[in-house]
Image (cartoon, rainbow, N blue to C red; front, side, top):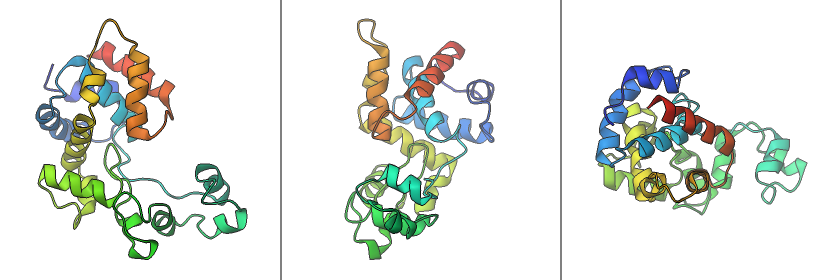
Length: 210
């Protein structure tokens, strides 16, 4: 099944701005973490392609209006007046919503913004940066923006994929429900099923191309 070619990536993700860079980064990452069958590669590319806007957006967008903050984090922003304090302020917002969780220290530490979501599958929180650093051999604690490079973005996404059992979920088994397995993969990556229809349509298109 491997290697992935530039032509193939251009067909399945036509809006990808740097297909050559991504093919160069993806192929060794896919091999390293055994994402090496048609079913595994198709699921991986569908999920990462959707998460990253076809490999063009590698950092979490935290530029929210006050009204949107109340929808995304209703418990944290119970009133418009409070939400206004964090409107269109990504750094202040990240430091609040990611404080004292996923390995981060308190709001004043700045960990929330420093370790906000980055990569193809957005790695979030100090503990996840530590785990990825340990396995991949890159110091993402000191250099978190390294996750914005194709090489490390691809490796971190493939590591996350394999370490969360997503290869097994992606494997094509004739007696199970593909959409159900794919929905489970989406929940593990996204925390919910946002964009499931679009992800599944992309999966089917990639499968046809591969």
